Amino acid sequence: MVEIEVPETKPATEWVNGRALQKMNPRERHGRAQGAFLAELLSWSREHGSGRVCPEWNFRLAPPGEPRRPLVPDVAFLSYERVGFDDDEGASIPLVAPNAVVEVLSPGDARRDVDEKIRVYLATGTDVVFIVDPARETVAAHSAQGVERLARGDLVAHESLVGFAMPVAILFDKVQPLK
Image 1: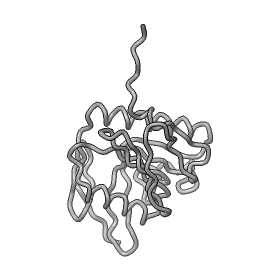
Image 2 (image 1 turned 135 degrees about the horizontal axis):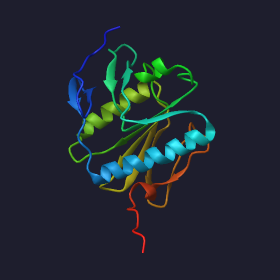
Image 3 (image 1 turned 45 degrees about the vertical axis):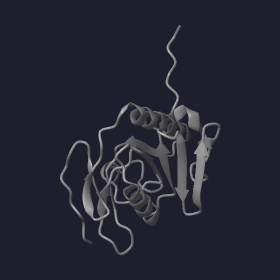
């Protein structure tokens, strides 16, 4: 199998739309949304003992008939069914798609690049890709069944994440100072 290599950089470099694309350094709203989603998903995963949850995790994915390429989601959940609990080497840089992906939009993200990432994740077996838009305070849940658009007052959930439900507002609300 052909594997596309990109330089190791900080922030990470991915392969998107036929080119190396370095992720952006997150701003406060991006970091807050990413951190909140990470915390909620990690808490759910620990409660259910269902898999690993990590931020900025390097995956090497190959859609059918295409080269393997690096993608680094802002947050990913990978079940123990896909990579076993004891398979630390297989989990280091997984060659299988995560079950769930969270991508938080940054001001410079091109729509065509975001769409390509969604396509690659779904083509390689990801169950759901959550696209978080801090500017609009929305979440779009992309899956094989289509797109579900969520706003404040809605719950982020998906049938593949049994028991996971998180209010959209958590992603965007600032923590109130103690009085």
